[in-house]
Image (cartoon, rainbow, N blue to C red; front, side, top):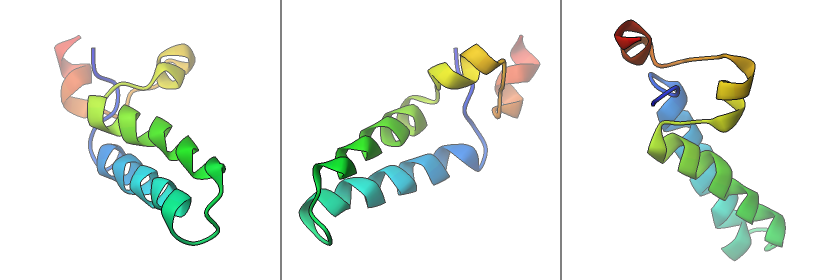
Amino acid sequence: MLNVGGIDRPIRIIIGLILISLVFIGPQTPWGWVGLIPLFTGALGFCPLYKILGLNSCSSCAAKE
């Protein structure tokens, strides 16, 4: 069940990678690991928060339902 698609998915992956890079470069704080959340939701195409709120940014997925 996918609910993340279109432009939302690559943006999540990019933001996730940027945040994770902050663990290794930049301020080097452990808060960068928060980037795992958008990285995984973008890679998997599923966001639990979208499910709770009833949102769907995957237009091809919505057509299948």
